Length: 307
Image (tube, rainbow, N blue to C red):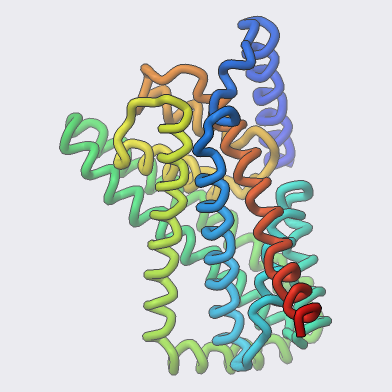
């Protein structure tokens, strides 16, 4: 009930700010300068490559956990299409990914849940690590009070995350039939992880690199928008925004933009129309995800036609 109330509040806030910017403030089309930039195509190509890299990371995780050689194009496509569905119906994308992977690659529920959990936790840990790193760099240029604020904010975030995910997995385990079979499968997966722990270390480094690339894409968008900002500041703003969104477990329209607005007001108060930038970046990011999702099957189709 609390989560539904929070989601509704965020939706109403997003609508209010959009109404304010477009109606009350009489926003002109010039504020969408990001779409008019001649360099926008480079940002789109960069984001498509990033999405394909993310799909590849999930493919590596799934291969390792399932201990089999799955098809890269198939897994990546399903993962990216699942991401698209999550944009429209939060949570539904995970169900789509499982049933498609079960049908095409004979992936077990335990294998999918562990793979998805490893993906989510690695992404979260990478965000936390880079948030601390960029935060410390920025603190050195500001004052000690910001370090205290970052420290306590992260503690609150971690407590919130632990409570929500703990309850989430408890409910999942209670509702799963044939629990004994699932536990046996998890033991097998645990042995696989122990045997291939070095591989998982490299996978985690891949996640750190992935978050760094996401931060660079946001920095590029800010520069195309005309903002005077350093890479460190842009990275910190993006990472804190993405981290907060991940921990809140809410993926509805407006959440990224509202968090971005709040964080940017503190870090770069001089940049105007940051909400418009957030909306523009989300649109471009979603468009790039769609293109990335259809890239792999398109390549496969072309190869079949040629051969």
